[in-house]
Image (cartoon, rainbow, N blue to C red):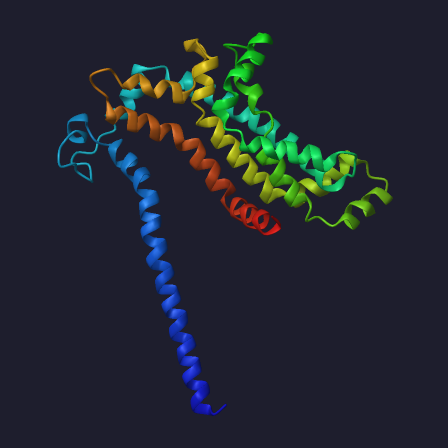
Length: 287
């Protein structure tokens, strides 16, 4: 190829790369704005008065930003108690779920036993069953155990998940068998192998599972609404509708309460963001 031909080819390749980046930004930026806009609107609405929120046409930036909405939320309902109830009913099943899913994932990935594939596919098939279809049998089981209107009744249904087991299995499958065999030769027990080899190598998947589980339990509405009938055990998703009446909804208070309610999820995401992105990427590649 002549020198002129190579230069023309290089310029075409450069322009194709620039055009590809332009198209990528043209798709990603509007999508990012579309996805972030509801959250931005929530944040801005939490600093508006009720009179400003119901204005038409609506205002984007608060004309007179106020923190009074947050004060009213704390004074009108026992927000701290609901907050603590949500923390307990989200943290406890998340910790247990991460442990059980990690152990089950290691079992399906690294141990051979009769019926392993059948059991795994049966567990995987449960992901196809929507949660509302399981509410009645779950409630009957919890009721038979005498756990209705108790914290344990809220927690017990989230102690493990099929999606978590699947994610951990896919991740653990990437760990070389030789590494585990070497530890066994050195006399390490299976529990020690799990704690000192599998868990450290699965930090991205564990962080991802932690974030998914905590977010799911923190925002759960249907199950707490069915199981809990005492105000002492109400969680935040059940408390926010207090500000919505039959004839008037205090949108300013709902926005302020919602913003305070999602703060733990945002903090957890900030701490696990690096592992979360890596976990999603590696699990997808292994799948």
